[in-house]
Length: 405
Image (cartoon, rainbow, N blue to C red; front, top):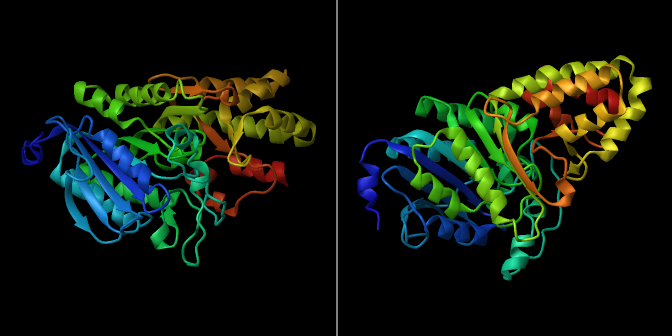
C-alpha cells in the first residue's frame, strides 16, 4: 500500500486530482462505488487522488487520499460534520487544502453530482426509482435525480451543480463557481488545468465562457449522464501510468475512456473536452450569424423554426446542439445566413487549439451532435440568463428575446 505520509511530503507531484463529491442526496451510494473504483489504482508519488465526500446517510463530510487497495474504510484522513456542497466556501476550503498539502505541477478538479447546465431556477421533478440491479442502475440517468424541492426560500432548488439535500437543496450556480475557481487560481498560482464535470448537461458554451479565466479545459457531458458517471479506475490508471502527459492529452483520454465504458451497454452518451478560452471564436462567429438573421427576421422566422425543430435538443427542449443547429441553417439557406453559419461551423471544428478539443458519442439520438450545447428554449426565456457572462458578451440573448418575442 502507498505510504500517505511519503506522498504528502515528497514535494510536488505531477498531478493532483481533486474530486468534490456532493453525495448528500440520492447519489450517496454511487459515491461509495466511485471511491471503490478509484482505489483499484490509487495515488502514486506522481499523482495524488483526493476526495471530499459529503454524505446523505450520516450527515458527515470526509476527506480522503485514495490509495491502491484502500477506499472509503481505509483512506479517510479527516472527518467533520455536515457541510453544504452548494456553499462556495466549502469548495474553496477543499481546493486550498488540496493545493497546500498536495502541491502539483497540474491540477484536475472533478465536480461530482447532478448538473443542469447553466440553469438557475427553482423546479422539481420526481426522482427515478433506485435499483440494485447493475444494468438497471447503469441505465438510470442522473438527469431526473438533480431536482430537489426545498422549503428554504433562500435557496434555489434548481441551480447549476453540487446539490445538497440537508442544506435546503442548495447548489453552486455559475457565478459562484466562477468566483470560487478564480480564488482557487490565486492559491495555486495558475489556471486549473482540467475541470471535469461528472454530472449532466454541463458542456455548454455558456458554462465554458463563464469559467474561461480560471479553467484551461472543461470536460463533461452535453446530455444527461447515466447514473454510473465516469470510469474512475481507467482514468486514474492512465494518469498514473503516464503522469507526464500534457493537459490536452489527459482530457482527450477522459473522453475516450468515458465513451469506451458505455460502448457495450446500450446507452446514449456524449463526452467532450472544451478549450474554454477558445470559445471566444464561437462568440466572434455567432454574433454575425445572429445579426444576419435579425436583419430580416420576418423573412427568416420560418428558417429558424425549421432548424430548431430538427436540431438535437436536451433538457426539456431548453438546450440544443450548436453545431447541429448551424448545419441545419447552412443546409437550408443559400445566401448570407449560409455564409455566417459556415464560419460558425469552422469555429466548432475539433482540434488542439479549437474550442472543441475532442468529442465522442454513442447512440442514434445524438447523431450529428458535437458535444457543445447552447440555450435556445421553445417559448420563454429564463430571466436568470441575463446574469451570465455569455449573455452580456454575446448577442445571443438579444437574438433569443427577438425570436421568442
